[in-house]
Length: 108
Length: 122
Image (tube, rainbow over all chains, first blue to last red):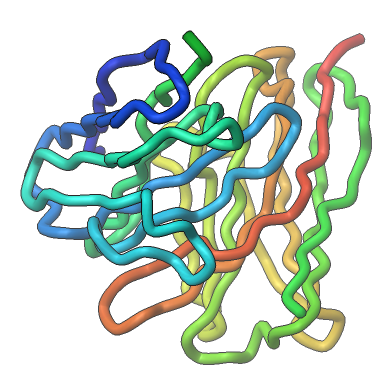
């Protein structure tokens, strides 16, 4: 199975900060990567798919980049509602479609 | 409006079989570009993909749980059912179902149910 490693696991940031989260795959997955946001007690919400395509309705301060084995999620200016846990998921050609271990973004 | 809702027991005993149902609305399980997946999340831990089923009845399972999982669908009832045998306390988790949609060559998990917490305890 393809493994995903997110870094950092935890980050503390302030409103207005630029935040970057990295997801590394154990083997190349082209651009078959998605990012989710999850708030406590809620289901995950799709933010980005195909590594860099913003899901409809997601604010433009979120962006994704990368291909192959290294990917990033960037929040250009952190807003109060962005404090949450973020997960990457690889959706390479055939399952299993694994998730990263998560990155918790907390208020500094 | 697309919605998914999980239902099933809140508490199961060790060694029992868990049966969860995902009832969907706003889309059809016969839609060629769509399917449903099950994902779980133990308390305070990461998401874990479990299984999926597509409209053509194509199925796939988590490598580590494959021997214990069965996924099926009833298109007429708009339901997808997941069974997991030989439940253990480590299987305590919130179980989610999500819609899978194909967008060109990419798979999206674009709508999720609210999740249902299943506790395994004697």
